Image 1 (cartoon, rainbow, N blue to C red):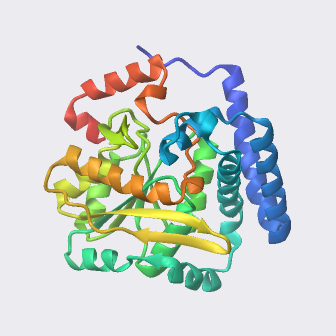
Image 2 (tube, helix red, strand yellow):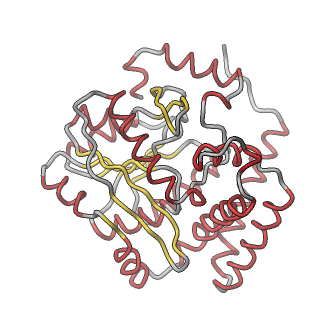
Length: 320
């Protein structure tokens, strides 16, 4: 079925979204840090108090092991919204931060950095996979200054101007950004070329954006996660490590986990990643920025049908 053109209302929302992000980058970085903190914390508290945040509660209920979303403490929801707001506050301010003072602070907070250097010593590259926790852009800044540039993939946001705004932002930080769709070469090809040069790849790994992932068990329920990190590692021999980011009151935490055994193939390796993500997210549930449905049980019939179509696609098409 041919893709339907966007409606005028959808186009208007996309344009307004682009302008809002542009305003954020222009204004927030100029504010004193203490004022920016108060503004974003206050906005987060208002949202937590007046919005039901139903899906966030469903997600957190699985993480903390309570019966249902109504059993998730309000304090945890408030902390989660504050954490998510902090991510955006820092994103808007990061391009103007002084790297000569930021990097030493980040470097002191990183655990397990030897897994990256040990992996690179093997000569086949390193794949770092992480969930949407803490501030992964800060982790990227640390990686650029500690090891060098790395390749990552960006979802093709709409309108194109918004997508380009995010690409420009991350490229300004030293990242090599590859479009998930619409690039001159398939993303998997570009990523394999990076690994073949003994480079580093960072991929956000718990949301299956293209509905072509593999089924895993995550916090006791079925979901699908991207196969890309596992497939890249198994195809190239690269070292695959889970990474987790979280916030501390005055800074950031980051841990590079032990390399994952890729000998069992893509599905088994993706399950091992999912289990590593579980353990890390459970330690810092408030810093996991997942407000969308993730588990199959929560997805709409239309989304499930889209996944079914993705499952049926040829393997070579899935790689792209």
